[in-house]
Length: 136
Image (cartoon, rainbow, N blue to C red; front, side):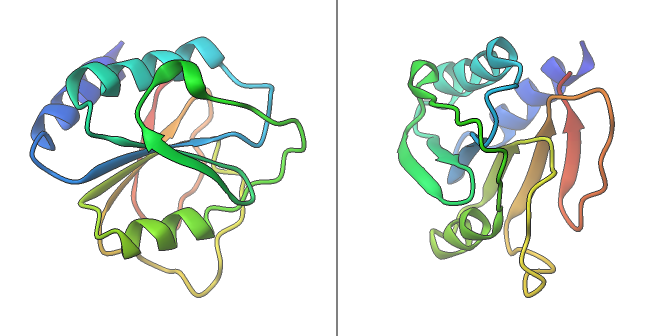
């Protein structure tokens, strides 16, 4: 799996940077084992990563830990609050695990940090900015 190597390389590159990992929790119909494995990778290689759980709002911001994710079944996701939070925190990099079907405010057309959309699906969605890494 090519994405494993890419993720290892990226996490190692950002070892001394301020990094957050966000999990889109808007759907219970997700690849939970895959997502937990990604979170575990951050937990082991970069334990100072912040774990953000969000759907249409930010549910929690904690140190990265794979067994703490709670999913919801409403299917409503908005990325706006997380993207604004990341800007306020002056993050160097945000990794966002999502299917990229949520809402982004029209006022946000770029970010000042590096953004990676980690897509756990077989299709490649369009993103307005940032880079996509398919992790399926």
